[in-house]
Image 1: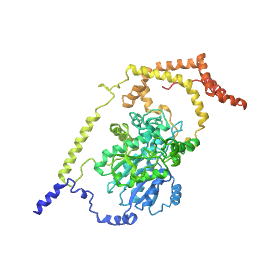
Image 2 (image 1 turned 45 degrees about the vertical axis):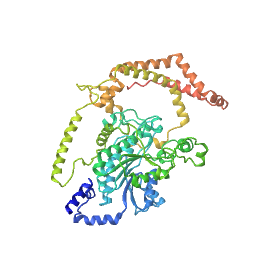
Image 3 (image 1 turned 90 degrees about the horizontal axis):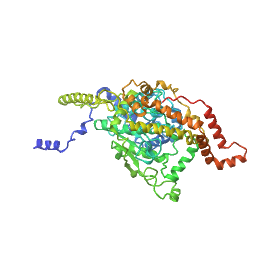
Length: 582
């Protein structure tokens, strides 16, 4: 009778022994270490957050420490500043430990992870929050990390990728382990903020990463540097990697991987390298015009919720909140200080959290696999192998060994396929219609750059002002010559049959169209420099734009903007034209 009851109990649940999965027999030598761990942390959960000296990270640490249920390790590059902030906010040394990390250096990231492992003793890490980030949209050129990678991508994504790989083993023994990536609406192109404002986050085929992403290659897609796009691409990488790690590790390790968008923190130190006028008026615009403004405090509460709320232990989720813009803002926005309900901005409270949709780019698992591999190669990350079944049962050990061999065999089959190449291994080039379209776009673009573009660039310099010095400084390396770029070398030589060379050849069609394109551009230049119609067009544009302003300037006896533009254009025409590198 008892035997029957016991068998029925086993059959009642497929997870009958799941509660035993983390049982361990503690060796006598570790008993003392376990006791020291208990004395150090008690029953508190251990949280690692990057970037706790300011902004979102600081407010999140405040909220976590206020509960008394967490010990927070704050990963920062400036320990003195962090200690001052901790004293000001009353963090307390018993529950908060600042540790140095320079995300511009992979060696520093590894050193930080070793320091964490030593500090935590036998305590598992319960939360890892990848929060720190930089935003350098005004940079006219890339700044380089100590490892020779573009800074925005390394700080925001690559160093966090390496950190997760180093610490994921230390999380497996936690009862509720969570890795949380701070994403952005700008990396999600199924929204107005992400898909309606140029530049758009797009990794294309990851040619820059595949080429090693080393100086002078500054972008993940291998093309020209754009500071705003570098930030958006880094956030796209974080959200893609969160989904990929969920698929790769969640079921096998129990670790939850999720990403969040806490809203537009318009007054965040993230914008410290923007021009002064932007930092002054952007919060006003977001608060009273769009309604998408979120304070640092409220954003910190949202990130805290994803760390703390039991509902947020779910893996593979992109968390958002129902606050923000609604129709009919007007007086209501003024009365509520911009706190209007809607999707993405302030307001809504704890229960407004929901699982948001992500764009097709974020959900592209095939590209995410390439992103994982290339990121591993770039950072030298060493991910744990948890794909094989581990059990004391000899039968399961044999099955695990067989399954590993089968997986390796099937992966070798997949790697034989080479998309973009024909049977002889030659790259597939663009059809003739697309070649004609590319040349047409370049000719039209040349005309616009020589006319409207000149005026626009002059207006930009006069109205926006010069880029702050703090935004231009801080590169760990000088940019290397273009001939060191493997993408350009592969394209110009035409000797490589790698995916990088294929993509460059297919997109620019360098070998076939270079001469024709140079001839077209030369004709455009001749028209604008020597043709009376071209000069008349430039003059008409500048007269129309500055007509009223010039009248007022004449009264003050100063050069008008029209005169300055014409002087600038004249000087430009007398300068020798740079040789095309295309």
